[in-house]
Length: 330
Image (cartoon, rainbow, N blue to C red):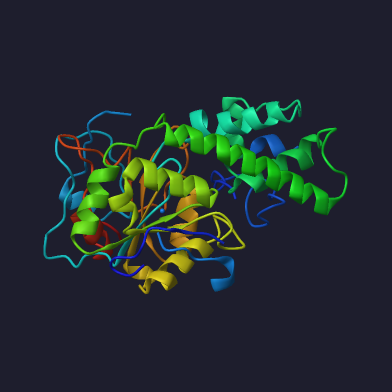
């Protein structure tokens, strides 16, 4: 994104296994473990163009020798020396980072779509948590039906099933967007603050998500507002052929924005997003969400419960700059 790019969106797995386990591989993402139940708007870039407790932080002496650290309560934000060079770009995941959408947003919209089509399918909270280990809604449905059996009303050929899945996903996206437009799902604490600080310092901001581009654009436009949206580039949906944990979307963002991946800081909420960011050679801060609180974030550069607003802000842009100076990593 140029310094003041227009905010039209950029269009077009699984959790790292717990140490000591060797899960089966996902049929959609061949390098990713299979979920447990299956084991048994910004500038437009198209495919052709390619909870609230205060946080406490470890003492500074300990930070210097740690690869990553976890924060859960404090009265003041973690900051860095103002002399640290700022990141070239701050890249945000969408679902779980900007908005905690999954349980009461995407899951509900999937189930409403299944009910409308009379498919006899419903994803409860626990099952959907397992499905989230597969990046992408279309991929999620395909893997689920491949394992549990396709609905009687589904087509029989592979090509027709792709169209069937696409039509389900389109309807699910429309239902999800209605929730966003009605502002029934609020931004997470600190999102506006950090984005405003980042933009005010001339640092580029992008949203990089496996979710449908229209849904991501709706979140950015309706919840962040048009003024911010006009300065944010969106990379979403099928803009890249391989979704997280593949690093493709973050590498595309760096290339499109004209920045070095090593100068970018990513804000994610999931282990598959963390894997994608680290594989792209970027620093990654985790802000845990409802479905990801118990995931393994051992490779993260920092872990928080949220970004946070005063008086309980967890971190700021200076903290992101400090990560790039490796003051908090070994």
